Length: 118
Image (tube, rainbow, N blue to C red; front, side, top):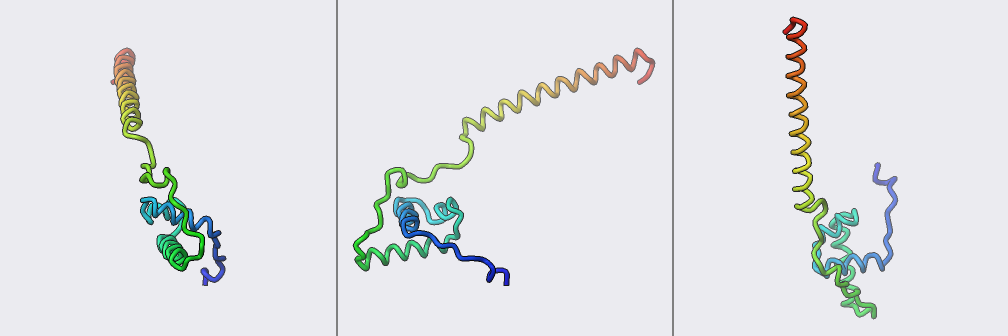
């Protein structure tokens, strides 16, 4: 019942053709669908639609993939060099925190001895 309240989204043909061009350029259907926030089955349907459109000779072939689309998708997130720098920074921070903790432990022992407590 909840699905009957949802409105269907419609996408322009140009958007569908660009999506198909990205797939024909070497990217996977799953990657393109995830990037656009769409289900795989919808993107696959667009792929079949575009193939039928060019086979029927509609006069407007699917656009050729641009050079940047032919390159496989880049990894999302920090590079290994950035991760290594972050790890080094966190290790330095941890060493400093340990040193401060040890100093405070020693200070507590010293002040405890001065007051006669332990």
